[in-house]
Length: 108
Image (cartoon, rainbow, N blue to C red; front, side, top):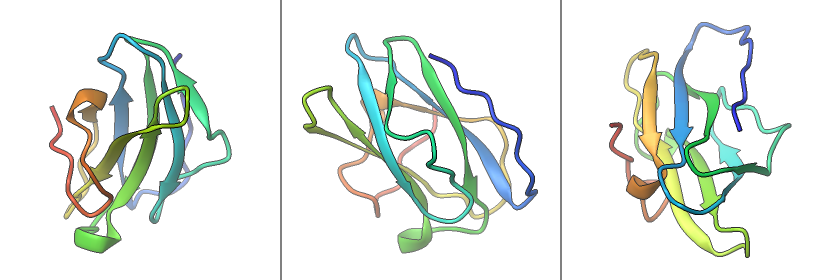
């Protein structure tokens, strides 16, 4: 599944969460400035991705993050975006999910 958005703010980085696993992943919520969550929870099929935005100048506890679950509701991890400056086109793989919201997830 692919989700496209049109954003009205320029103080964000564009983010794509790619399901690089063989199972459906549920993006269940987001925390942080600039992310939008009206379409969450959202199921992302294998090889699919979810696009959103993360706050710029946000590190540590201020990072924008998404919780990832398996279809049974068990925690896979978090995509936590350490974005000290604007960076568009950030891509994060589900298999690289962080164990918590305060550990930055490395982009691919």
